[in-house]
Image (cartoon, rainbow, N blue to C red; front, side, top):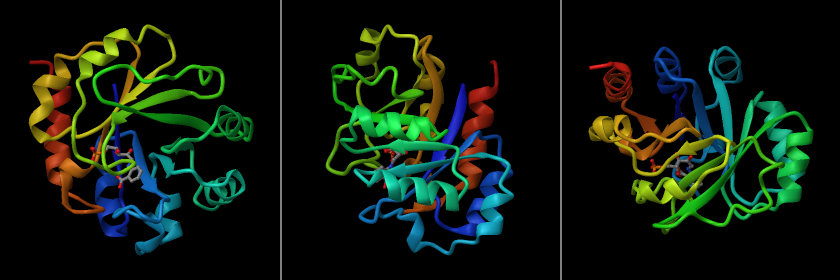
Length: 206
Ligand SMILES: O=C(O)c1ccccc1NCC(=O)[C@H](O)[C@H](O)COP(=O)(O)O
């Protein structure tokens, strides 16, 4: 299982995080988020030298603008966290990016019909007040209804005390674990030491 840490906007925090055993770092390009990346202290050379896959998170943004930002920040994955259409996903995938489409979940599997050919993975996040970063978990048993091959990202409210729960959750399509607000000192500033402890406990076989 791979790990994504989402919602970074501080370059020294980013440098510190890049030294940990994670696979993806998420940057939120949604102005109304408390973790809005473009409001942070961006240094493009730090971004380029990260050595981790970069995920851009967008909410109902225009395809042209997504492409422009993806090129500017050398993004690998585009995470679409609003009500983006199949056509928009297809257009971004055709432009050469990996596309993850987020779907809000409460206690039943959401309607993902039509997206299978247009995306590289689904991202299942908790339905909440905000589009994302609510810090609340959904009932993961809802995912037992998911029987497709396409991988998914498990997201929503995963925190430092969830190691045993994650280890006990088995699904053949689970590919990435997404963590965010439950590992923060303040919105957009991650507790890298807590992240490192979480990952080492998660990867420990005992
Ligand atoms: O985190 C945000 O502020 C956010 C705002 C708007 C759209 C998406 C957002 N986050 C996307 C993510 O991938 C988060 O990691 C995901 O929602 C889980 O966050 P959390 O519940 O805090 O673990």
